[in-house]
Image 1 (cartoon, rainbow, N blue to C red):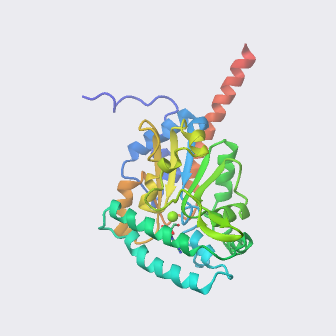
Image 2: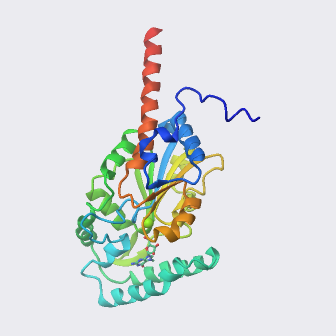
Image 3: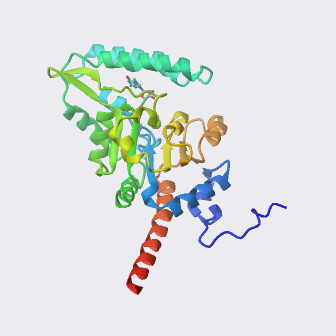
Length: 320
Ligand code: MG7
Ligand code: MG
């Protein structure tokens, strides 16, 4: 008889069934024992070993709002700016209609899709060139979406900041919009970095996007190699990854194999059709959850143990 299963857990060992946020009906796990193992690794390792990597569009922003208003994506925010030339709007729309179905095609292999995505981002950059444009236009449109972040996003980012956890917002969208929304929502704390496609200017006019290009299928820490962010986090081997698309699950794929990664997926569209794939891809699948409550719960457990450790260390110090 294998005795490991029977062994009493060490004191303080956390059980998934004792964590209410994880026992809710809409919180699904293929392998609760794995989730439990990772949570305990995180709690034992403490905040110093943690980092968070999150997608932006429909992960930090809501997939569904209370008033039913659609939330614009980061590229959508840019496209809604009034001064853009008519030709730009027509042509980017054409690109969207051509390439978006390829991006989400369930049958085409990723290598083949990647060629098309590089084409899409390249052509989009070429169109985003040769006219003047002021960031204030993005700020104006983005101000309408600062309230479209998931419930308790403010608290979540405050938790991450307080615990000193480096937070990477990783977006294949438009960085200028991402930063604008995060700033206006007052969550752009010093521990937050945005890696995304940012507008480039030449002689006062737009000149496409800055390098490196970040598209749907290179959105992982390997594109960060050489980036100052990489140096900051490559020793942090306890990672929470959050996303709403299957590809988001690979965002931490450049980190050492020994890392512990908790992948949280927000599922909203075509729940039934997507469920199996999301369950296989993410450790925790949250169905129509428009809050940050589950990731906050993980931070809460880490912080609680951290406080106990600090108190124990202080008590030991004062008894010396
Ligand atoms: N996406 C990618 N590109 C564009 C673009 O030029 N315009 C618009 N409106 N959308 C674009 O947030 C990343 C998502 O944005 C879409 C180049 C893609 O669907 C991508 O997954
Ligand atoms: Mg997304």
